[in-house]
Image (tube, rainbow, N blue to C red; front, top):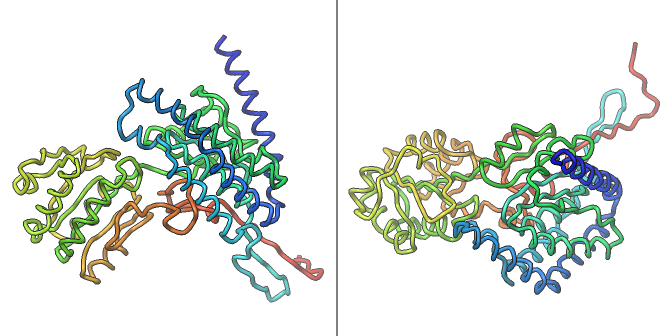
Length: 425
């Protein structure tokens, strides 16, 4: 019986893939006006359909509570009018962005008269595998559409009803603009076998973008036969340099950790220079604890803050996605950079300092996709970068790094124009 079910699921996914491939061919030649019309119409459909989306989300939330998911998971899953409006604004913002398709990246002429241009083209069909956050459905669908790609989405089982309701709005936008509804599709099953099948759909999917926890990313990287645009975990750091402004240190540390604990840009480790720790750490830790954060500190931190718990080696490598923060005192800038290089995930790291020289060294030396000076790590977001939205934060080094927006969802080809040139024998 299992084999029959697997065969049936494989056939369903192949049908989705065939439809996506056909839609991708249409989108590749669609005008900017047509794509932007679809995005704006989808934004309107999200706003008009907010009641249905919230009702679907309520079903998902009820099931998640029954299964006793963590508070952080529930926060990632929850939708309200404000978050629906944020999705709609994201689509409107994407519509305002320049169309990357056909954009000329470079052009030159060879001595033999050949005119060579490098231009942006869509990736084709993008498969996105993600976990609990239903807003990814709108973000990924909108970004892929603007970049001329078809999107095949496999959302988390926790957000199944929410994502399905959001997809209805997106497809309404596509229909209004005369574009194929198959340009954005959601895998219509909670069966976990669908993930493994997607990772083998080489004929249908051109790139896989996983967005979720480390276990999901590692599984995709190990099993995929399709190129992967990886979004690894966000073990993000805030480093309080000796020249940090005390008030700014409090504001940034609290925001970076507690604004939303369940997102990949949330700070998981706080580092502080030893010479400034007695001055900087007490007010920072007091504000964090007052905000409900558990502090896990080294011996020096525990001596300064009796409410802190002893830290373990594993804590330095942990993405909590919760109101827990590992805190360490370091000898200075060099040790802070070594700690981040040893334990970090190359996602997002920030320095707080009024010393411009130290800031520039940190920015140049920390090998992360996003490195900030005097700003919260929670700015690690495509919307905050002016991209409208993002599919994720890519932490690899090939093709894309940092927020994956419209441009990162394209590749390029060369257009070579001649006047009859032939290569000499």
